Length: 142
Image (tube, rainbow, N blue to C red; front, side):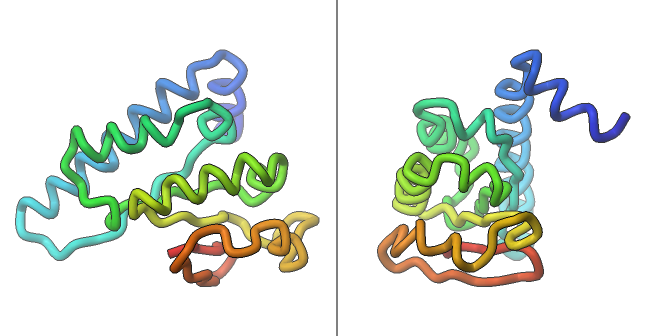
């Protein structure tokens, strides 16, 4: 049952609304903690492949950051590696756009499927001044 939620939300088209709400709430909460004087954190938000397939999704991200006032360097977007490799050109364009905003990116479950470090060759220098960091099964781009 638990594993059925996301696929069902994707099938019904509700994933975009749910994802936008999740992103907005994550940004709002991180900003709230910042306003309370807590130390800055990086809020990581998992994104659905359907959200990332949506044209102009980077504008939604920019809008959420603007609405909430969260500094972009305090947001990290996570995408499943398998989804990123499905359309490398689109993924690369998206990576460049959000990196230019100052948002961090991560490829979740990196190397757990049938891809590996060899697949990184598709993402040669995705962003200027980007650093690739491995943390467990997450490849972060900062």
